[in-house]
Image (cartoon, rainbow, N blue to C red):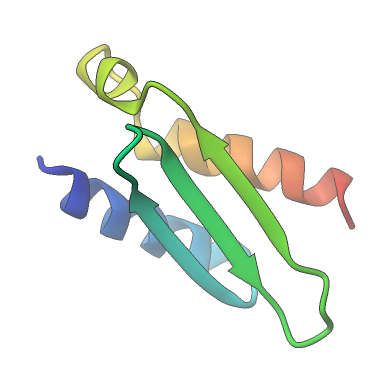
Length: 76
């Protein structure tokens, strides 16, 4: 699986639980960046550093989605 496929799978999992525009990408600094923008201006950003190593060691989209949802709920 490539970082693009991982990003698209994670976005699909987040879309099931979170309302808003969800952007997921791996940047040039090897960080997985998640940005959620909403109409109510309650926007949210999160990143996971050292993504390559986490990915190679089994960092699943399920776990990433769980971490984003957990942090997102605290920010509401």
